[in-house]
Each structure stands twice: as structure tokens, then as C-alpha cells.
Length: 385
Ligand code: CTP
Ligand code: C5P
Image (tube, rainbow, N blue to C red):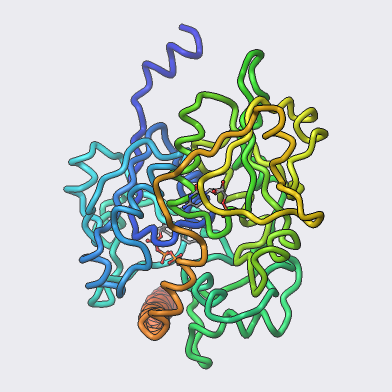
């Protein structure tokens, strides 16, 4: 029996993940990557808007947007729409899943109970490493505070602390989702990337942009670009370049974070980290680009007042690919700013519930340890007699 046959003979391990997956970020992507590594086939159950509003407060993205974002993740094999908030054994059995995987934080329902209590008791629950330094809560905080501090990903300055604390009570700090800094490593990039070169004859398609807060508009665009059937390279502008044309506190996500978000998308083959704004002849030659695409969103002239796509246009290698979706990064920021108080209240409530659950868990562990040591000392007393 060769290796392939033995793999076929082995039962396929089916893994279940579920969650809100609101404002899908590279923390979610990293959870899905780790979950896929634990088995062969990954099914992701996503809660609908009504369930999330009931247990956690209003989501930023609606269910249709959230379903599509997760479907675009390259480690996901199947999405189940409207999955229940509390994970039951019936759900795992219905989709023929062996176990469920969640990050090493806690998710609580409206009553403050662990949503994974049933699968944990049944031994059908596994944990993966939660990605530090990114959460929907943190991203909301960044959007509400005008700071460029997240552009410097390696130092944690007082400004950064301030940005993080905007969405929390100043005295509280969730033990699970408290914000620490995301530290990008080469290993993480390797884990996220395909690491494959284009095959001989592949048509090389190049697109560039900010791809900030990687969203459903980007996914719709990249899906259409990938449908042109080529090797898709995404050139990500550096933080300085993005800031020079979007001003204010843009980009909301720094280059390292944007790299991971884009790499996790199944329509992308390769990413250029810190691509130049102008698509020059040099760049076209270097990557052997056959076609350059841009959506139908507007873009600014370069520093010399020239069209950044002048070269590919002159070569007849430029195409506008309408995404059919008008969402822009600014719209997301506007959604957040408009509903600022709702989101602040939602985040604080989530954090307070988590602190209460953490304290209860600590107290119950201490109680067990005390009763163990009492039993031991009673046992010693008996043997001494
Ligand atoms: N997750 C993770 N790392 C993060 C954020 C989320 O591993 N930085 C994982 C969670 O542990 C969970 C899954 O992603 O297994 C889906 O999370 P979700 O239901 O969207 O909720 P949250 O954990 O609340 O995500 P966030 O804090 O970003 O709102
Ligand atoms: O605005 P940004 O630089 O992030 O856009 C990156 C690419 O995605 C551009 O080609 C842009 O036209 C495209 N896009 C799109 N539809 C959207 C948002 C972005 O086609 N709703």
C-alpha cells in the first residue's frame, strides 16, 4: 500500500468551527488554519444576525457578508449558515464532524454560560492558539481613535494603550481577549502563504492597492480577477504610501496585518509586501505581468501627477474589473463611528461577562485544590494512626 492509498484508507477527519466571524480578520483566519491542520475537512458554522444580537449585541457586518467572507478563506471547505450559538452534539453529528475547534478564550451565551460546555463534557472539543493582538474589539477601538500608532507594529506606546482602552472600562481587563501586541513572524507568513511559483504558461495577473480592513468588496473584486484564470499577485502599498493618499489614520491595519489578511484569501496566489504606487515597466518585467487589473473605484495620480497605470495601459495590458460591490474601507469606519455607543456598550458588556466567568473558574479551581489537600491531610492522619 503506498502513502496515498493509506491516506485514502484512513477515515477522513471532519472538523467543526463556529462563531460570529464579524469583521473577519487574520486572527479568525489563523484559527481556521490551525483547525484545518487538525483534520482533513473543515466546516464552519456561522451564527445569523438575530442570534448574535441576542447573545452578544449587533454585529458590524450582516450575515450575508459574514458568510461570504468565511467562504473566501482558503482553509474552509464548507460553510453552514445560521449555526446555533451553543454548540451541540446534534450539530456535530448532523455534519458528521469528529470534534469542534475554538481558540483558547471563552465564548459566553446571553446567560453567561460557556457555549462549548456540551461538546467539552463529551470530549469533542479541541483548542487552538488564539492570535494575540487582534480582535473585532481592538479594530473598533482603532477606528474610533485617530492614531497612526498601529503603523509601528513593534512598539507599544502610551498612544497604543489609549487606543486599546477606548472600548473598555478603564478598570476592567478581559483575561482572554485583553489586547496585547501582534508580533509578525516569518513563520506566520510561511504558514499563510502558498509558497508556489506560477506554473509554466500561467497568465500572471497583478492588482495593487491598500486592501485595508480586508472586506467583502475586496473579496468580490478578487473573485472576479481569479475567474480570469491566472496566477494572482496582490501588490500591497506600504503604510506610508496608503497614508499619503488616504490621510488621517489610514491604514487601520498595518502592512504585516494586511499581508496576512490577503494571503488567507483563496483567490490570491502571492503578495508583494510594500508595492510601489506606480506600476512601472520594471515591475511588469520583474513579475512577468500579463495583465494588470483595478476595480471600478477611483484612484489618485502618482507624485508626478501621472496615472499610476500609464505603463500597463500603453501596453494594452490593463483592465477594469467591476466588483459589483460599492463597499469601501471608509464605509466600514463610518458604520463604526455612527454606531459608536452601541459598539462600546457591546464590547464592555462582553468583557465584564468574561471577567466574571474567569473569576468563577478560578474560584472553582481553588476550591478543588483545597478539598484535594484536605483529603490528603486526612489520609495522612489515618495512616499515621
Ligand atoms: N479567534 C482567534 N484569535 C483572535 C480572534 C478570534 O483565534 N484574535 C477565534 C476565536 O477563539 C473563535 C473564532 O476565532 O474560535 C471565532 O471567533 P468569534 O466567534 O468571531 O468571536 P471572538 O472570539 O469574539 O472574535 P473577536 O474577539 O475578534 O470578536
Ligand atoms: O481601495 P483599495 O486600494 O483597498 O482597493 C484595492 C482593489 O480592490 C482596487 O482594485 C479596487 O478598485 C478594488 N475594490 C473593488 N470594489 C470595492 C473595493 C475595492 O473593486 N468595493
